[in-house]
Length: 398
Image (tube, rainbow, N blue to C red; front, side, top):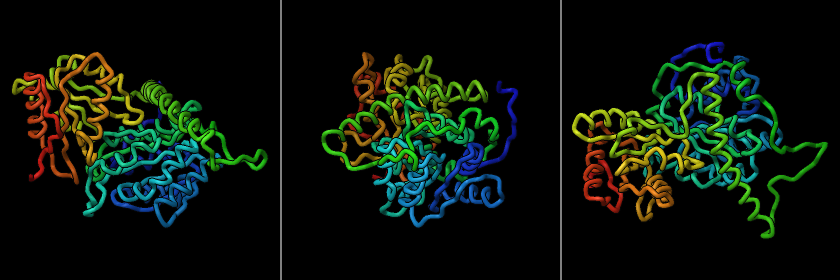
């Protein structure tokens, strides 16, 4: 089937890769407020709208809070919607993130990840998305412009799945990916809509059949609404796996919920997300030249957290390090993803030595040699059978 598709390659940043995906999906309503480093996404969509290349209502709002509120209203009316943001914009949306997921609306939003203030940083880390990890959104982290393009398309199939009906974030590294140009095979509208057909599968506002959405709920029922979100998130894992499998069958590219690199015989492994994974892979090759059997697991789907897949992929590894690009202040170990990986192994029969590495905060440079050093530390921990017990801050001037 993949050979029968319309194929066109363009040189695109991840920002533009998102815009071309949204264009292909024939989105009805886009609400936007500019913020660095996301602005190019909605600028490109505005250009498409002005040129008549998309038939979408572009709503220019006064804040990110309003942007998400606008697409909530449109989605509740049955429209296919999109918005994008980053950093303080995502933080300003925080109240509304819970409303979008609680109302079970299939909104898709891209995040060009950026550090949160203060002090003000326009540079990259994952503190913005980690701040939103418990809002009930499905969350992807991508590692290339091509994958970002493809994942936005997959996100609509997941969000609109009748067993899911949850909003989806597609996150990618600000600047590192948002402003880096790569060759991208663009999915055309005809093919995108065959993969993710436009069909209202979720409850919507209808004047002929009036309903109230998001109304005040007493203690008699609020708990049940939250549990329905729990069950929907569990279904989202199956939906994400299915969406990725079908995408691979149609387009010849798929990514899995997690990607393994040189894990078959690895004795130590690093878990990474986003653009870090590309550097970590180079470092794994270098570490093997220096006598360390290193491997990499790139976590692509962060919510729902694919714990069984992670444990399965690392079942033969003696020591596992998690490289976090955010800090969970005051936690027993300050790496947010580390704590979830630890929870995954806690409930499994395999108990590797675990280590938390925090790196790249505020886009502090992390080199191949830094990752090689992490692999070597893991080799030492594997020999002693004991991890560091606290997060190791890579590259900080202490």
